[in-house]
Amino acid sequence: MFKIGVFGAGHLGKIHMQQWQQVNEAELVGFYDPSDEMAAIAIEKYNVPRFTDVDELIAASDALDIVSPTIYHYDIARACLQNGKHLFIEKPLSHTLEEGLELVKMVKEANVKCQVGHVERYNPAFLAVGEQLMHPMFIEAHRLAQFNPRGTDVSVILDLMIHDIDIVLCLVKSPVKRISASGVSVLSETADIANARIEFDNGCVANLTSSRMSLKNMRKMRLFQRDAYIGIDFLNKATEIVRLKEDGSEEGLLDFPLEMANGDKKIISVQNPEVLPLNAIHKELTEFAQAIIHGRPVRVSVIDGYQAMDVAHQILKKMSLHNELHNV
Image (cartoon, rainbow, N blue to C red; front, side, top):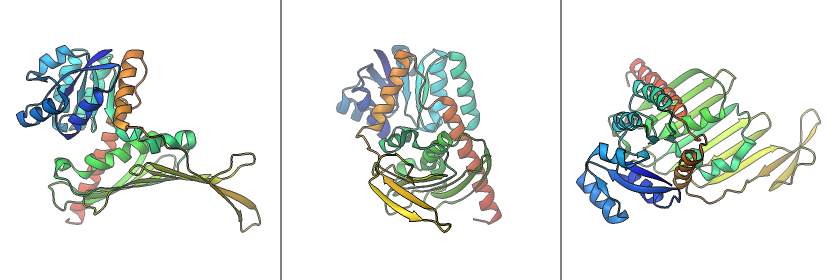
């Protein structure tokens, strides 16, 4: 068992505290948050000790969970790494690319475990796909949310789209070739709706749309590859796979024949892989704990977190250039 401390008692910080109390391998020693109001709620709700000194919390912990606003990630992480502590850092990794690159270097030098909180990697609908995702060549994602002032300190790219950027980079094992993007600020000072097109060297194209101005919530991704269409509903925890059926393969939920223009006959199989019920945040924190205790690699490394940030910032630059050219 190891001791974990949490930085941040906001909405997500409280959820992390609650989940840490249910991780068998960890002991939640306390949290730090400068807000007396947020701290009082956390103490009353979860009976967690509050630390009023950053260094004291770091000294009392074997690992730290950073769930503070993004602008504070770097300074907190640097202090933790200088003391040789393992780190879980909520996405995005840091406020700037320069800070992110520094954290990558510091994690390597400290030789500690560092995981970035891209929680959709643990979404049961995504996990249900398993090894089905082999060679996607076209990806379309829609991540739509109703307006919430809580996330508007950053662009919709770093708030919502970065989830899909991370998933796409995880699936497409090829360098990014070209990015184009556009976005509009509606209610906040940063973009509230945006679209990005990412082209890869291997020919794959990803078309991502994110909005926090929607009347309904949606988190869907559609993937197309040579032999299959795969649909993932991250919100409703459902997965659908439509592919050409091979001889001897298992029966699908629905199999139907097709006669092609050249006379060939093929069978299309529709399958719905079992989606196991699980709490994605609990699973990611548990895996992080097990990575520390058993010396296993983390699922979302600091390099993964930096690469997602890098693409997100490229999209922001393209979006800014597009708006300047069109006087948006």
